[in-house]
Image (cartoon, rainbow, N blue to C red; front, side, top):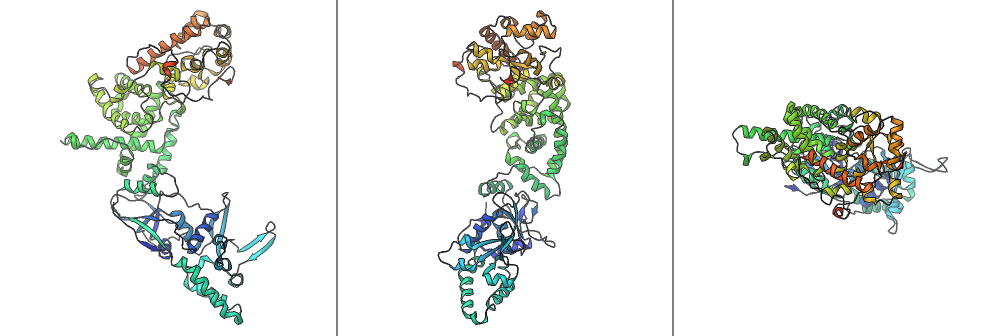
Amino acid sequence: MPFDSPDVNLGELLKDVHSGTTQLPDFQRPWKWDTDRIQGLLASISLGYPVGVVMMLEVGGNEVRFQPRLIAGAPEPPAQSPTLLILDGQQRLTSLYQSLFSGQVVDTADPRGKKLKRWYYLDMAMALDSEGDREEAIVAVPEDRLVKENFDRDVKADYSTIELECAAEMFPLSILFDGPAVDRWMVAYLQLDAADMAPRLERWSAFKDRVLSNITGYTVPVIILKKDTPKEAVCTVFEKVNTGGVVLNVFELLTATFAADDFRLAEDWKNRKAILNSKAVLHSFEGVDFLQVISLLATRAKREAHLASGGDHSSAPGIGCKRKDVLRLTLKDYEAWADEAQAALLRVAQFLSNERIFRANDLPYKTQLVPLAALHVVLGPKADTHGVRDLLRRWYWCGVFGELYGGSVETRFALDVADVPAWVAADGDNETLPRTVEAANFAPNRLLTLRTRNSAAYKGLYALLMHGCRDWMFDKTIDFASFFDESIDIHHIFPKAWCAKNEIDDGRRESIVNKTALAASTNRTIGGRAPALYLETVQTHAKVAPDDLDKILASHHIDAAHLRSNDFDAFFSARTAALVSLIASATGKEITVADAGSVETAEQFEDEAADLEETDEGGEAA
């Protein structure tokens, strides 16, 4: 990655900013330095102290095409295209440009964020004092150049004319790089007192040589990346060196790239997001996720085209959606796949609804939406047929209960998009088992540590429990409509208060084994009483026969006899086995129940924090 590293005169840098020769890539965040930081920067420059390196990129490369924009405060050039883009140093250069070169009042803020307009002056006396504090010598003055006190009732200092500036020995830094303006100020300063002109000239010369020349002669170390630097390298370098400390995501970077082709990616995504937000389960799906779906589809299409043309597998392009893959997307790629990806996501929402996942915060893994959407595009209408849907369900639940989509998962996405269609084409043959299905493994004692929504497997089991189950009070099977209408949530079966009174250990009490999906009003009916007592209340209020209620409990994988006898140990053991069987059925994996009820065998799993969203006993903490 070749680069130059010249030292550039500050005045030349600011001149290029003013002319538009040097601009910003559009992905740069807005300028936001407060007046204290500007004063500190000016003080350092006036002392000749180093203030850091500026990094720029040559414009005109074939691979990197960012939409440029002017530095804040710079005038619109007649038809000037930039030759350099600032990657690092925007805040410093903007502060220096606005205060020293623009000739305009600086739009800034105080440290609390209150907007201000300020001119910056150098106090000659303080600047020439070898014992003086240079930061105190940099004075910020309001737009009208009147310094006031006593709640703005009294004028403490007035610098509204050149004569008043000279009399106060307050040099306006806004004219520093305007030679004729500096000469006019000097003449006015010398002519204030003709009898005292000689000592005033000596004082001016000292100020100019010892202070102003530090600024006008200041050189800035600049690293200039050559125009043939790859886009990925440019973005990586930007994030490593950018002093703002804010990492840009690939969506922001591609927004700047596509803008060079006059395409507004952010606006396009905003419109698509509005459509996707009609599905509650997609509310957390973001622009970066959407680009990953498109990257998977675009790279897969290129791979398939290579193989179809007779190319060998060893030289075929890979499927991918890592950062480098997304940054290589072209506008043509985006336009080719965006509509299909959007339509697929709406089908994904229906798929998840069928799996009893209705809201974004109940998604086991938001990340799994990416390969799921890509697979719906690749498989097309077949994804909704019975046999293919069964295979997709198995793959999906293997990912959830194998807990395979946490952390960095882009490699797994690529494997899924390659493996699952091949598996479907082979009619689910075990010889073509997707690697995600193959890798999935669920240890039964994991149930003891599934206690909160912090776990993907917890959310997954909550969804599985809603398949075919009916509310205890209301004659409704839990589906999309009843989930929202009845405020369905997950609640304790043996209430927390009862467990505390009967010395049930916290691990089993809070495990998902002791929880199920119930309507909010049903949970209030249960309260904190013993199961045998609250079942009688449910029978009375719902006017349901005991045998019928037992069948409803069975739809929750609960043996009613254990509740009616308040036998927690027998209940926990039987339901553990039932839930293990439920997970085995969903994943198509054989799972042994041995030791599933032992708290000690669960110590290998990380404990989870309390879930404050879960409530019980009429709304008190569960």
